[in-house]
Image (cartoon, rainbow, N blue to C red):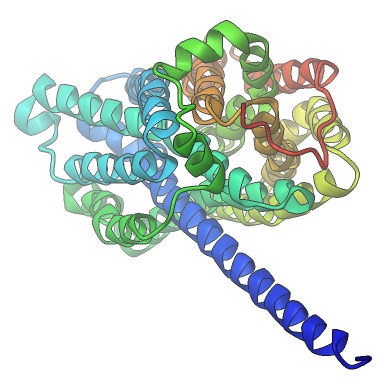
Length: 445
């Protein structure tokens, strides 16, 4: 009789280990799919910004280089105005029909729009029709991007254990950096291998056409995922909302406002410290395109490394502390770092841009998990997508345009630093209205 308990305990422990191993493999698969898909999306979306000086010369022809660049960044901003309707559309699909389905469609649409840019005739061939077609493709990119990050973070948050939820969602956001980094490296390679004239003649198309093979890989991986446990439970119980965004705005609009404000520095600050900085280092600081793209690449690598560290800290010391440290640091160091970028040698440009980007990453690592924990499963995709895309539209997509305009109007090369600091202050103010949610269970109702 004394031997009876022992055999029964051993199979239980084996079963638990097998189950834990299976859960780990399943979560790893989810994270891989989310990260790779986000890399594809943000490569496609970011390559336009990194090729801006060449796009300006080919599609926004003007005797005034500043006017041409403003036209290029205006088209960059237009795509962001499509992110809100894109977020609402894909948020509706994701909250009503499943996260997997929505995320598969976002990547397909993004890849097709980017590849189409790569085969467009330029202004010298079709005149304003070419410019209009480019703007249309940018709108499609914006519509697709609107559904990406919110859905990917909802997917991972709903699949992660509470203890490591911030760490795992921060890995999703590293996909945005790695995608932009890949875009910067492709731009750096193109400008190193080809002459400026060769790029203007034909080589500018290569970075856009690269979207096709990497997009197929991302789409394949996402199509082989199961939906999240929370969505399956929600669907099985018949508790999905008929119009999720309407329910969101009626019952939880305060959370959407918090998301909009918390995201200021990770949208506006992000595009100032990455996409715009690459142009700033060339046009204002007088560095070569190779230095500008190399500096941006280094900043992206350091930012990508900072994200999981920030997520880990958010899981150990709390979301609010990490958000506060990152946004306060960005507000204090924004101007000094721009001074280094504007007037210093190449190494100073590297340091200034990297510090700005690291501070943005500190906030970013703790942000999306905070968003997910504010919302219920029935509106989580819609809520993250709507709040994040409103901020992107108001502060992110317009950032390069406004920064270029500020220098043109004021004649002050440090004017973009003021914009960066403003975004940090908005985020810092919002932190005081956030309730700490570390270790909490995600809401399903």
